[in-house]
Image (cartoon, rainbow, N blue to C red):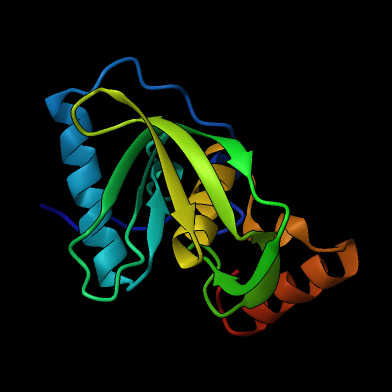
Length: 166
């Protein structure tokens, strides 16, 4: 398919909640295919549709070592999160040149429409859980650095700007 351009921060669409998907169509499948190509080209472990300017609640996640295991999610919501947190360095192609360690639940159960248009509940653990939560944030118009204090958030954005990423 196609590698798409990621929107540069602070594009307003990155702060806009995405719209629910009514049904899984061929158009949706094409967007997912482009998202997987874009994620692989970064390389990254996940991508949300608003990151490429498509304002639909679509995400892809592939935290496998071998790759080629991408999970396609439409309208994902966390229905259960572990109390135990896991820290992970997070970044975004929308704000290159910056990253921060974010603590998120180590495991989550997510409800979503899968590639067949069937509602599915799936458990994600470790890096998979971090990535799916990161993508769900994007779908709600949030960035990973929104989990930081204002001081740390400003430092991350400043660091990216110094490196030409924001």
